[in-house]
Each structure stands twice: as C-alpha cells, then as structure tokens.
Amino acid sequence: MHRIGIGSDIHRLVEGRPLVIGGVKIDSELGAEGHSDADVLCHALCDAILGALALGDLGKHFPSDEERWRNAESFIFLRYVVGLMKERGFSISNVDSTVHLEKPKLRPYTDDIKRGLAEVLETETNCISVKAKTGEGVDAVGERRAIRADATVLLAKV
Image (spheres, rainbow, N blue to C red):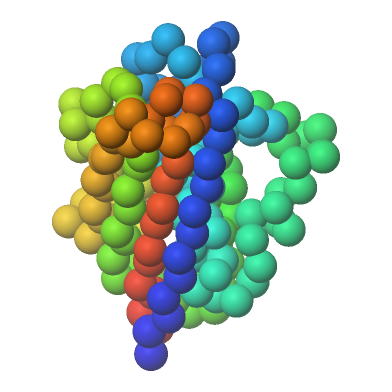
C-alpha cells in the first residue's frame, strides 16, 4: 500500500532573520519571517506527510499562537511527523521538492540539505530530490519578498 501527500509553504523574506532551508542555514542578507525558524522546506514536507496520512496540517499539530513554538527548529516538527508516520506503519519511498527563491543560489547547499533530511526522514539521500527555482523576477518570489517550497512524498506500508 502506498500513500501520496503534497505540501506547500510560503514565508515573507525580511532583514534580520536567518534563512534556514531543510535544516541548513543559508548565507543570505534576507531571512524567512515566521513564528518558528520559518523553514519552508521542512514545513512543506511536514504537510506532505501529514496529508498522506490524512492527519491535517502543520498548524493543527503546532499552532503558531503557542509561545512554546516561537523560534523552534523545524526539524522538531519533522521528527514528530515522522513519528506519526512510523506509528501507522509507513516509511518514506521518495520525496520530490522544489524551493522557490530568487537569491541566493541553492545549488551549493542541496547536498547538505538532502543529507540532513535523509537522517530525519530515516531514508537514503537517493530517495530525496531537492530542486531550486528562481521566480524570474516575477511575483513575490521573483521580487525577493518571499520564499516558497513545494513537496510531494510517497509513503509505503512497511
């Protein structure tokens, strides 16, 4: 048995905040604004896994109005979601993700992102795809006002 889930997340880019993508701190003058560390890729992956399991979304499990999640590392959320996945007898077959960011270029960071995600998702790096796209100067991403991530997961019954 297989289950597919799709997740998406977007955050404003602002000065004075770190830019964390897939658990990796990215060298950038702009960072993502959010209640937690605003890691759009981890948030999209959490929603994809929760969606595949029909368990709602990230906000249901980690409400943004709860102070205990202020500036929380998003790997905490991802580890929790992986725990739910394992409790239900599933594992990651593969992940396909895209990060939409005008600058900086993510290619120098994608191997580190994949390694960290593979560890948390308890799978191999060759099961994880992390692609980067610019906004070509169009919309909030292209104007460097936002970062967005989309993720699709395929879960397999163990």
